[in-house]
Length: 259
Image (cartoon, rainbow, N blue to C red; front, side, top):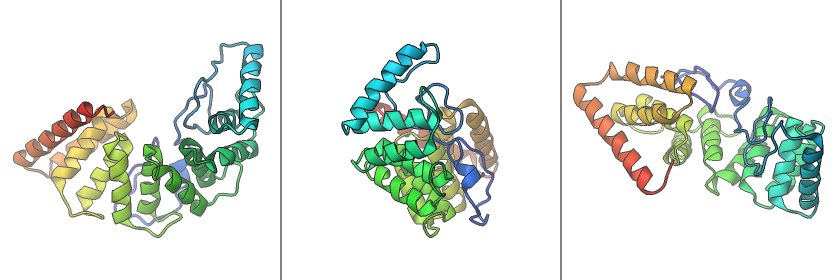
């Protein structure tokens, strides 16, 4: 199986050198503002639709700006999303960074994650993996699953931190337990190759099965193929045990209201 970053499809073998991760980190953020085409970011509530009139969009932006200027972290994050996308305001990465930073410094996890992504990709700020890791970590420590996954990626590739597969496993696992499909797949890869954990094909199959069950269509196909390739190395008893573990995980997740 090949290691993946969220919503991108690098094909790194377990012994690939930790080369630049820039291409892995493009377009890795979830969208809320409709029409974002370059940087897709997390956390905007009450997003405008392109079908709305310019007047209604302007009123929304004005109301959001008032709240942001008053120090409301959610509004600061939402206004930053608009600047990052150019939706309702002129596209301005530097302004997005400024607003994300204001919210992030108040401890707003979505903004911390978003600021980390801008540093990782060099949008509005010089590209800086160390800063990206710092902001990912702050969001991850608050339980943000996407940030946990991204922090795992940074440790896996040695970007902004020394490469550390044990740390990568820890962060991937936290995100995987929250239902992040890419983290589940990446955790499976580390189990398959014994990176940061004892080698375990059963656990690898379990996590890749879970990833395939909840990934987007393209990723689902890729993860299913990875699972089938792994199955060729396993006995029927091992596959049955892995399927049982995956089923138990899904049941437990549903019972606790998980994804």
